[in-house]
Amino acid sequence: MSDGATARWADVLRERHFPVFLLLCFGIWLHAADSLLVATAMPTVVAEIGGAAYLAWATALYVLASIVAGAAAGSAMRRFTIRAAITGGALLYGVGCVASAAAPDMAVMLLGRALQGAGGGAMVALAYVALERLFPAALWPRLFAVVAVIWGVAALFGPLIGGLFTEAGFWRGAFWAFAAQALVLGLAFARFLPGDGTAKARAGEAPTPMPLARLFVVALGVLGIAAAGVIGHVPSALGAGLAGLALLGFAIGLDRRAAVPILPRATFRPGAAAAGFMLVLAVSIATMPFTVFAPILMEHLHGTRPLVVGYVIAVEAVAWTLTAVVFAGVGPRAERRVILAGAAAAGLAVPLSAWAVPFGGLFWVAVVAFLQGGGMGMVWAFVTRRIVEAVDEGERGLAAAVVPTVQLLGYALGAAGAGIVANARGLGADPGPATALAAGPWIFVACVPLALVGMAAARRLAR
Image 1 (tube, rainbow, N blue to C red):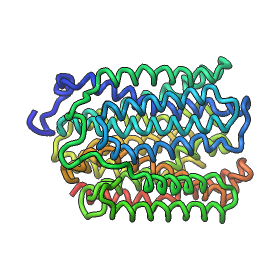
Image 2 (cartoon, helix red, strand yellow):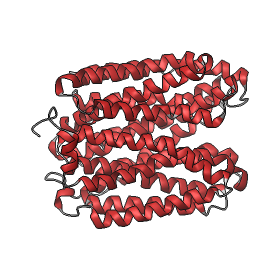
Image 3 (cartoon, rainbow, N blue to C red):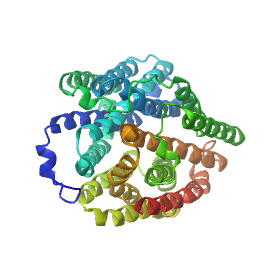
């Protein structure tokens, strides 16, 4: 194996760290399946413990904690071995599952969801760091293809697991089951992950204090953005969203001047790293409204059953998996065309959503889901590799950890922006066929500029 063109699946299987990779995939599974499982169970949870007004916060706090934990992962891996850091993430996730399983009211449930998000976000970010540490760059596309398979499996089985426990009248059992998995995984991480310098910081990544002040500002910013998506009063929602963006901008300004940054230095310089991060952020913002609002729009406009809607939306994750596997082995010459084609497919899905979801019916919604997921599945491994290889040697682990965090930030921004548009068109206050038809097209039209930004970033990255 001399370069990306000659890396084969057999090379992955022969890698001495391949069993470790399987453990990392288990951690990604917990994080990926969690949100889909909870989305299925939450209506029953609310019926038992109350707190319907805070239903959206069960997801908002999970995403918020995941973003903050992902941002902190870069500093954590400078201070500890990856074994210690990711084991802590698994145990924190397990504690959150226990809190959710035992929750007597929504306040405890929200606390549990925040802990689950922090632990899950840390595991995913640190898994990317471990891949960068333990495997040669030539294998990354194939490894990321396997990661995409995990997300696809989670999309298929997450709703099923949640539905089975819920229909059996034991929704708490779903959380207990994932708590048990987290405990087993934490013990496996502690036993089998490398704990020496090969998995710790490289030269130039000396142990440093955690940037707690900047992480606190990031948390407040994301919280303001998340609040914007659930506030019914449009001016208040705009104010919360703008305040959140201002806080994130302030945090970025602090980070650019910090001795120990959260983001790699190359993020703010013209080049592959900046283009790659912009691609991830813009496309995540532009495509997230489909995941958030397509289910309620299809229910009100087409009478589609929730379970059917859930699996149509899951087409996105399945398509991501399929294209990631199919294109994992392309050589350096074809890689540029794959990046451009994938970004174009995901970008095309956004304006198509404006017609397909409110007017096109089930088939066209599935087409949109396939384009979004398939497009990002094509490019994800190559974008990640180009970002990591474009930063300074001492910041490559940091860059690997930040990629999924930027994706989550894009999801938070996209959900909040779509929520503001939906509320402005009356969907939040009076959900029904009339307001769904009034809001449906505009939710997606508002995201078209971000899709264009993502396609432009792909062109820069491909060069």
